[in-house]
Amino acid sequence: MQSGNTKYVWELLKTVPDPEIPVISVVELGVIHDVVFSNNNYLITITPTYSGCPAVKTFMDDIKTCLTENDINNFELKIVYSPAWTTEWMTDATKEKLRKYGIAPPSNIVICPQCKSENTTLISEFGSTACKSFFKCDECLEPFEFFKCI
Ligand SMILES: [Zn+2]
Image (cartoon, rainbow, N blue to C red; front, top):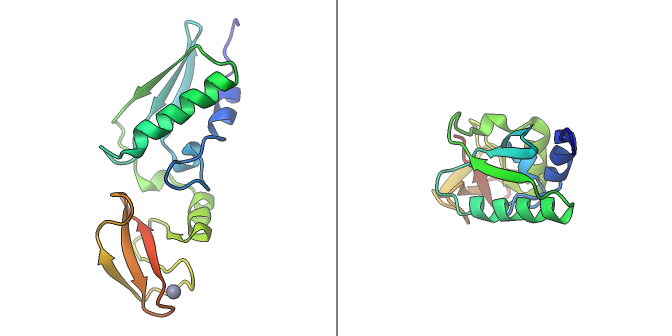
């Protein structure tokens, strides 16, 4: 191959789900920083969401599997910490997917994903993962997870 098809690699990456929130892809989550082709090699830079987030290793393995299954073997995954990932990299469409999945998207105001009430109470700083905290809605009484803002 003379020149790389980074667009194709991006398309493949869009099919790799976030291991914790399967309705959104790693691209939608915003952890794929860049895809560059040089010296016949794809360099994929990844910005982890939260340092020490156990999901990082999982999705890196998932990315490797996805690429090799699609006959792309000349790639390297590189973790970069700067610029640091922030929830601001999430698009509105991604936030809407989170809401439909039942997770309150990152926002200054915690809004119940079920009834959209702002009348919510923090139950625990940590939900199923360190990236989320646990809330209860005081209107519909449903517990839900909130994707923390960083
Ligand atoms: Zn509610």
